[in-house]
Amino acid sequence: MGLFHEATIYLDFKAQSKHETIVKLVDLLDQAGILNDKKKYQQEILAREEEATTGIGFGIAIPHAQTKAVKETRVALAISKKGIDYDSADKTPVYLIFMIAACDNEADLHLQMLAQLSRKLIDPVFRNRLMACTAKETALQILQEIK
Amino acid sequence: MKKILGVTGCPTGIAHTFMAAEALKMAAKELNVEIKVETNGAIGVEDALTWDDIQQAECIIVACDKKVDMERFNGKPVIEVSVAQGIQRAKELVLEAVSGNVTVRGGKGEFHHSGAFDEKPSIGHVIYKHLMNGVSHMIPFVVAGGVLIAISFLWGIYSFDPNSAQYNPTAALLKQVGGYSMGLMVPILTAYIAQSIADRPGLIAGFVAGTIAAATGSGFLGGIIGGFLAGYVALGLVKALAGLPKQFEGLKSIFVVPLISVAFVGVIMCFLSGPVAALNEYMMVFLSNLQNSSPILLGIVIGCMCAFDMGGPVNKAAYVTGTLLLGQGNYYFMAGVSAACITPPILIAIATTVFKNRFTKDERAAGLVNYILGFTHITEGAIPFAAKSPLKVIPILMLGSSIAAVLTYLLKIQVPAPHGGFLILALVDQPVAWVFSIFIGAGIGAVLYGFSRDKLIDSEGDERHGTIS
Image 1 (cartoon, each protein chain N blue to C red):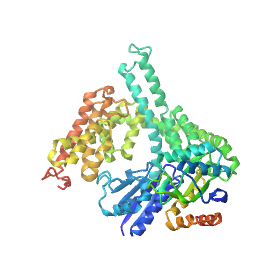
Image 2: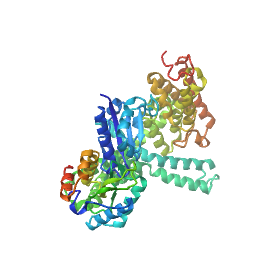
Image 3: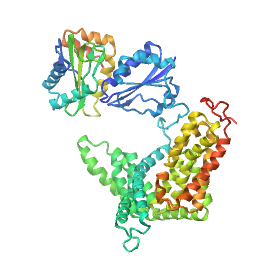
Image 4: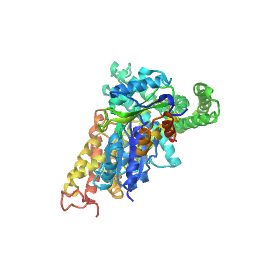
């Protein structure tokens, strides 16, 4: 039921570009059985990036889409040690990528949790702890602090 | 401690909205500034700003990539940026907000309490809100239908009648289309009163109740009763059935609620139709008698109502009565209402043109715009002027409007369209007399308004308002 799951956490993530990052994370979500329609979800994610990059600085990016193509709400996390060129607003590389798959249901309680996650990401201590993770369990533990 | 406000929002509303809100809060905390942030996210609006919040705030930071209600910030310093800027430059934004150098939105003195922030609206306000939801949905039908019918009269008042010498097929067609649009007036009014109360379930019984009201002659009075009845019955029904298991949700909304609410409300409406139709008939006759027996009294009442709150509930009460009577073929009543609604902005415009040395440069510019607003029947144009010194200006506007309305009723002018100001002059039966009535009222008022203000010593002084006498 949680927003995060071991199967959708990617440690030591490597990608050459923003596009590759997105494709890889969409694959990961699809393999975990989260998506109804992989193609449509990816389109929505790219469309949102077209509007404005979700690499909002502080070394994080949060590509996201709320669509019917999503079966259940889930957030995939990728942690990169090297940093990825994500075409960020502040031109710096990103180290944490949260890909949000939100299902299209207004009554979804997960939206509240996504809001809390977003709030938490502004906290530099929280971000640094996540970046330093070397095991999925530790990452999950940190993420579970979000209420 | 200084207090500022934030508003954040983005198109998807699941991430940036909240990051920006948090960033602003952190920055404010660091800078020792009190802040409240409204988030416009997918979960709806959270921590909505109240009227008091806005009143007390030093500045409002709007970090949004989607449309939010900005009107409420008129008269306050506002910084507008994208949601991404709100996240990245939170600290700079907060510093800027407390610097005191932020441009004020919409100019000072145009600060209106919109009522939307009232946390517990009064019963009167609730009824008014439901009624207005119905009226605002109804008016476009009346405008479209009324203007089409009025256009058909350009060929002659009997141009629709195949037996008349004036007969013209195009005119007959226009009148027919207009008639259908007008015919929807009461059902739409009723349905949307009910919808305002009970949302979609209310619409169903509302449409049926409205159609019954229209068909049985109980008219708009029956429609209003039917709207509230249908709305509250549907609301009660939905609440009563709330305990049903989720599997019955579909059955409930397409079968049980419509069937029961339509049957119940429909039967009551049919029984009520006789007495209500009589009452409705009596009211219509009373109003049209009044316009024959005491045109002066009627003109004063209408004039005062229209100018009292310029587009507010009192003005709307007169206006809606006019449109409803129009729907029943009374073209006299509306003529006075329109004249009274057009007068206030024209009065202001004339005053600012004639008494140049008593108005500031900004006021004179706003005055010019009032000509256009007046010509197009937009009473609200006078509000900024009235707001500066309501106790003095509103009585003058009421007097001007009353004169215009009284003259219109005395001259028995007919205006067959519910809106449009001077754009529909071609449809008015005595256009010259009508414009004359309006300008007499506006002219007398303008002279009084002009003399009520002091001469400005320096005509360029924008800060000086010559309102102290």
